[in-house]
Length: 505
Ligand code: ADP
Image (cartoon, helix red, strand yellow):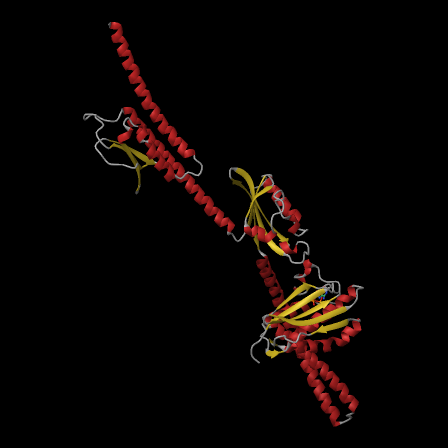
């Protein structure tokens, strides 16, 4: 009898233990379910929260009548049937230390607790654990979202930046923005961090040294200015641009990297050059004005004396020969006066005296003026005038002066070479602009010198003054035009003048 009693009591214990274990297993399944939810690739916070709410009722003692709701700010995530009832278990959820949400579990009817708490203490503990877990999950998702947003913002900033940027990790390029591609062309090999083939040969060592200093962490940051050929010019190597480069040590996705930023400063350099030239022109103008003043006074004296002499001769021994000599001296003196006036004009800021003229006519005038000198240098001239060149607002003598100067320079350049002596002058138009090109088969001008030759006083000739080209450019710019050096199939130099077409006669 006693044994049976004992057996009954024992089987009741086992039954209760079994029931208890079943409850614990359900709770563990709920927690495991939440972990599984978070691990799902690409899962959103909303999906995790919705899924978590669905996992709670099955973990309760009476799953058939259990409902759950998670209230986060203005959003409610709830099971299909949710009602606030008196049989309720609630836990607050803190996010970043602030109470932000609640997790509620309600039985939709009395589970037969008879007024006592229908939730087991283990169930309340589970709801608390879940609430804490949900708080951590929300924090994690929000931090990830903020990080993604900031990475996205940074990426947008870098992708649209007006400077080129490369990130180099272990000498391998791992990122390059579109501006870097525009400056140096598409990347051929990620193991080549610097586009050395685009960089001017004289600047390559400096750029490399700068990179190596940062890559070896000898310094945190270094700047270098260099010249480079744009991607479509790397083989021809005609066009040169200027780059300002900052190389710095940094971190990218947890690794040490080298960041190479490059800004195209060609325009800035051009302006710098222009200011330099203008400075020199101003001082040249001052010197010229002084010289012109000194020459002008004695020149007026000479003219007055010549006029007196002429009058005296007319009164007495006036012969045709005397008059001719005096006439030619007077002409020479007037010519000098004209030159002096031109120099003085040059010293002042000049407003050209504009008239609508045909560029072809000015080329004609130029070839006539240069004919003798070209013959003397043994140069053959080929003139090709386009019929449809627009009329341009020009100060005729000034444009002819510039053209004569360019043709004379071309002719003089042949003295340095044994090559065939040929000059071609051609005209044409691009849109509403007229152009004149003066090409020669001479020695040409090295790319590195193509801006220097426009600097006042730059000359390679033993008796040169070095102001011809600077005056030419000044004249053309006063006409709102451009004067630039190009390459020519004739093998020498080519100077191209472009002038805006005028509209009224
Ligand atoms: P200058 O003729 O007195 O030297 P310029 O300003 O006219 O002064 O020219 C400057 C320099 O530009 C010249 O000394 C020469 O080296 C170079 N140059 C100009 N035109 C040519 C050309 N057609 N071919 C080669 N070099 C040229």
